[in-house]
Image 1 (cartoon, one colour):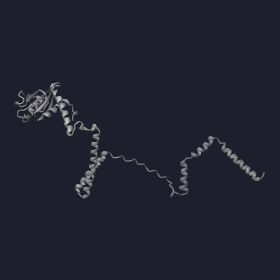
Image 2 (cartoon, rainbow, N blue to C red):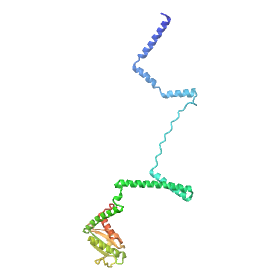
Image 3 (tube, helix red, strand yellow):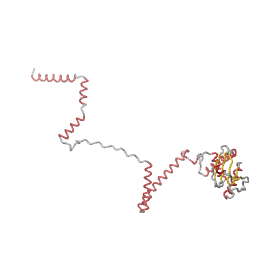
Length: 281
């Protein structure tokens, strides 16, 4: 066999032996070798690279030898509340107004007018949206309870009068009137016929009481006061005074002092006897 052929044969045999040894490794060992190779600490690799570039090659001028820190993420500032924004607008308006008054230059006056006009536009927009919201939501529309238009008000007043008259027709079954007057009282001369008219219309018993002992041509069957107003808890020095007496509960219900129209007197009696506080407003 030639020498060259012998050397080639030995080389082939060595290569086959190495290949067989590599191929003969168990799968687990092969995977472990790969895992160990991949599990090299990246920190050590980075340190070696930094040492190579920064220490040996001295390339710190062109490379970051000290890694830059990531920028700090600042949390966004909280949004200003609506109240603080409105306060700021008011403060700005007052400042511009004061400056325009104290230094009335064209620039200062113009700045105040422009800012004021912007706020008037803002207020007009609010008013418009307010009105539209009321139109579209009947629960917000107070005019359904108390109309303000001429036609709606007339209809409401007619309905209210009918309801009041129905209540007044049943009033005499439970209530009576105390009417305190004085002969020397000019307002009593005006109020006495009104009380007499309302009582006659609804057949309500009236007990007229003279606070000074003087007579009344409208109530000839009057009586002189014997401290009734104090016992009822009324103001003792004011006349005329009208008090409704509840015979069922035995308590007085003051209606009012001074001169009242017949319609107002009936309204007060109706409200105090038929409506709870807060139900009619």
